Length: 336
Image (tube, rainbow, N blue to C red; front, side, top):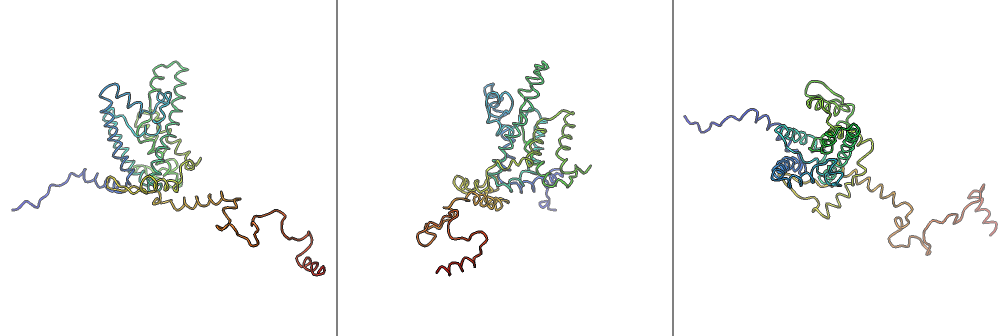
């Protein structure tokens, strides 16, 4: 009896996990895959680098720790990429990283496809900066409270507490996705249906429950940014897709590059590029109002007889008040 055709059965948990993760990975564009791969790799690499000596630990803290101490030292670059690093101090932190990666594959691809990869990168830095400012504002209020109450240990802990991890960025994406359909509902793990406009708050409360009823200020800051994003129209601060397209044409070969088995999404290939182009043309036409050069023919002589073609107030022939065109023509004939 030949046993060559027999193959070992795969582990059932591995098969189920593969059926869940592989389709999500296939939908991830290039920048999302770079975040998913680079986030844990950088966290592990910086952990090893910081454990070498006290000097390397200071470098990691200065570059990636977004806290009040670095804010006082004007290390503002931590606002941009500080949340993209997670200090792994325990096995639970590594499990949280895996959960963050799963949630990132669920919410990041749709935003990248809508904005384009370059626009999504700018958006990540923008959201990280705004969330960091809100978080540090909360921490500053807590620091003042500890200072007035004479709690020295609380002051030290608050000054060193930083914003880390992808959770704030994920919560902003989740909030924006939920607010796109506020009248709908989301099934919370098969237990209860929650209205979409309250789902981010319910999820934050659930994580606080798992955290021992401790307030998670990074989630609170992300909720504040997510709910205020559309109300105050933060997207107006971001560069338009037409401008990003011109930047890609000059510097990035039109966004034609690939990595990790997928391609960069140029701004011209994003789902809302045509709408942005129409808005850009509309505002450009508004800026041309009152400019005679915008409406003048290319040859420069748009009228006969050598006249300039510009509008002159009260110039040309007209009628007196109460007169019609027929009365004017009759008076002219009588004079002749």
